[in-house]
Length: 124
Image 1 (cartoon, rainbow, N blue to C red):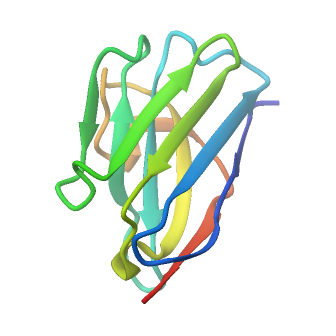
Image 2 (image 1 turned 120 degrees about the vertical axis):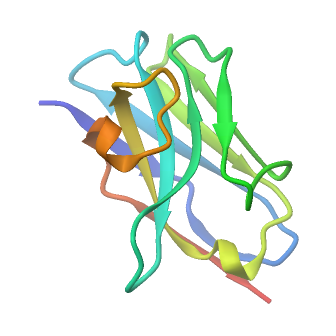
């Protein structure tokens, strides 16, 4: 059974940092693109960041570019999202996604596997 389990969310003040992790089990994602998405109540899930299988190519939503960094450790089968200079508008449930049909997938439908999400709350 394939599982993606996010961790590292929490409550942080504006300007602070958090590091999200996504531990994969049940299959290796070392040859797959992976990504992070986020969702707030009443809104569609939105793209945050994506990375290709090797880690050499990344893509970011404009809203997080320069503040967030996506990375993956293929040896540990784990995806990361380093979030710096957090803003209240970054408050959302963050989801890890795996096995993108595109090298660096920006669209939710491009991913086959999803985690359950981790809450990130940024206070002003």
